[in-house]
Amino acid sequence: MPTYNFAAGPATLPQPVLEKVQAELLNFENSHMSILEISHRSPLYTHVYQAAKQNLLNLMHLDATVYDVLFLGGGASLQFTMLPLNLAHKHHRVAYINTGHWSQRAIQEAQKIPDLTVDVLASSENTDGTFTTIPEIPEIPTDTYDYLHITTNNTIMGNAYYELPDTSTPLVADISSNFLGQEYPFEKFDLMYAGAQKNLAPAGLTIVVLKKSLLDQVANLPSMLDYMAQSQKESALNTPPVFQVYVANLVLEWLKNLGGIEAIAQENQRKAQLLYNCLDNSQLFHNKVAKAYRSLMNIPFVTDSKELDAEFIHAASQAGLLNLKGHRLVGGMRASLYNAMPYAGVEALCHFIEEFERNHTN
Image (tube, rainbow, N blue to C red):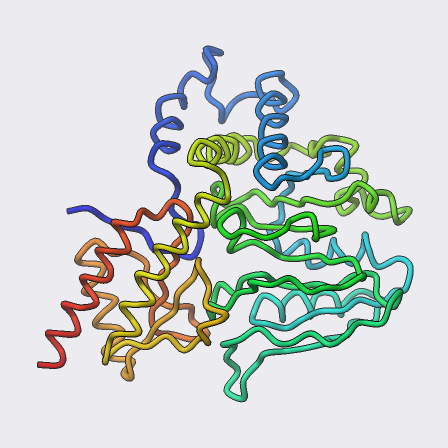
């Protein structure tokens, strides 16, 4: 029986990448050492690091003379603090858009920074605490904020940006859960950060892509929290997550061979539309997100009964459809359709939804 992993993260990885990792694990590049054992100072690793950095910039169509890439630890959650420490130096005032749980977490962490004013310019929170849209962003006064922060995709609620804000304020974003799976004009971002465990690598790696002009903005930051210090040491100020960077580069190569972000985004749209059509045609299951803002990556759905939801999740698992339980904040079900999820997996889920409905409505 085939199995499909719909987890929101750590998420499914491409089968060819996993097979290559398995084949190379005991003897990387004929070194007679595992990738898990090699020194982060060795040419074996620095070659992987440089390749991953260049592959990422190429896929995002970003100029290496303008943008730098950092491979860090701490998850996207550490960036909630690292970002304002490095960028909020001129106005000591920053702007955020609230579109869900991770936006709220970013806001809360920024508010802990001393002498920093944090303004929430817009929110799409409903009266019941859910988020089903992306809010309209008001006109932002010029030269007022050090940056405007958005979260491009809400992993938990399943709402996403399709149009970026048009602003002269530096635009920064948490792009963790639709990283490399949805097209954006990436050159509009001054800084992007993402936990890699959704679309790129095992947990333990965080990507920061930022304009080099943003480096060295603040003096006397703790070194591990300083973008400039990390850049100068080529993301090896301490021992980097070597294995995760290695897997990330394999995934980037896989994505490049598929045709890049443009090609995978089209496939992701096809997968998502198949599932949304299935849910929209159902009398038992519902997706509550407004159609204009539905995520390509994370698709929550529910019945009108928590007991029926639980029965569905258990039965789906028995059928090889794994990790469909929704986030604890919202319950129900959630299917995460990251880049490595094959179309066949979504077909299998839709067939199971239809069969489950027939068995419970007759």
